[in-house]
Length: 591
Image 1: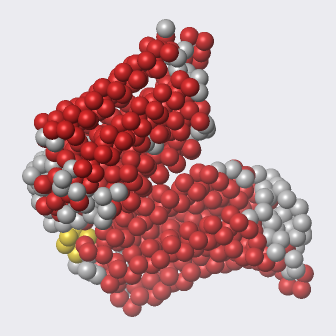
Image 2: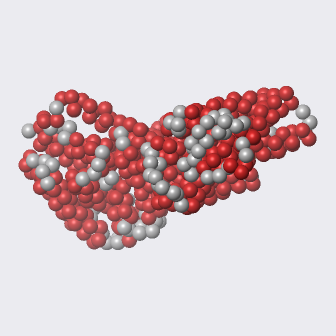
Image 3: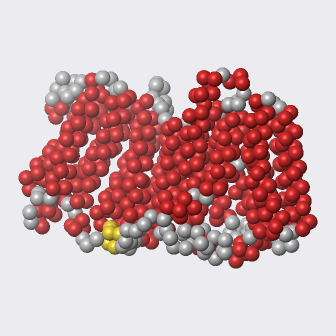
């Protein structure tokens, strides 16, 4: 096939992509106007052939529904022409397969469209109709790209090719899932909270992909796609909020205002554009990039270390603490069958929280890799030592966070998934940069560190009440003596790295030890609250008082000696404190 013919095929494919987008907007308008059954028969229109229906009668809902069918017919015709063109006029096997696939999908889409009318808009078929429409849009984009002259350009060499492919593919998957959730809301009035949670995940995935592309691929086409994707995601977040404000439930009767029709339609249209750009970016990452990094042995130990297993283990202990207290798992009166049902839920909760926490730790390593190289205790970590490429760590961290959130959203409940995502956001986006700005970073960082017991409680009960917030206060207070002891031991390292930890700002230690003792006293008080509100009994109360006073005593000794040895003793005491608190809860519940 000559170059001139290829150019016209590309133009035709681009026109089909544009026509498909118009069709998507028309379909969104039908749903927004509630005009799905304005034409009650199919494939005819009020008994007449579709193209013979008088234009003068296209008023009200008929205008939207019949117009949608007309555009769909044109798209079907264009797809048929393109499929024949590629099959008989193209030698490229990929182009031919895409053409045939597009034809098969457009036929299936037409059948689904007819079934939605024949079966009076059943939600499952309507959702499938919307999802397949977006998939067809992606196929037309693929045809436009692979027939483009630039598709044959020399491959762009970059060491981040593999990471970019994974990030782009992940972004496309989460965007497509988010669109399906949106269709579920429009057609079945379900999954609103899941859609809101999905918006945060899309923002995280798209932002990470775009920010990774800018310094990695010096090509205008990649930059335009990344900028467009980032801009549309920001716009879509605001449109989503506006849509939630003006949205009217499907069952509500009455005339809709122009805003109530236009805003959801634009929201869907922008969503389709985000999917299109993300899919195009994914295709280009797979088809136009070549990795310059030789394949070698994967440093498994480095990947494990980046998740900070010690921190993850402490998080899992506090998550279990919240789960036990929320569910009453160790109480005799729960019943054997109820207890057996709770254990799988606990394991699933710990898996999801563990993945998300490990992912947040990896992202923290990624953001601090430059300053970690300046500190004696961290310069041998996998990233500053160069054992793992930064882009691999970024992809690894994002994947773990999204995997954890997905496990919790699908296997536990949406509240738990939201809390874990919130904790990861606060830890990575808020606490990590604050370490370079203010000594208050410890208190800000204690907020995401205190969320795990809320996750455990929410997993067990599906809601948060006073008991959950008491656990939050215990963890919030506990973290201060724990992290102040670390900061005192490594204050010189922190100073060299530019971290504004309290011992760096106050070298004398007066403020550090005052804060340590104050929060140790606060910990004693809040650790007794579970007994006062009826969550635990006298055994726990007495034990919590003893271990709280012991922790305070170690803190007082440190304030007097100001030695690194006593700071390490306080660190060890704080590490032992939480498991002991959990044991006290178990013993108290059983006896």
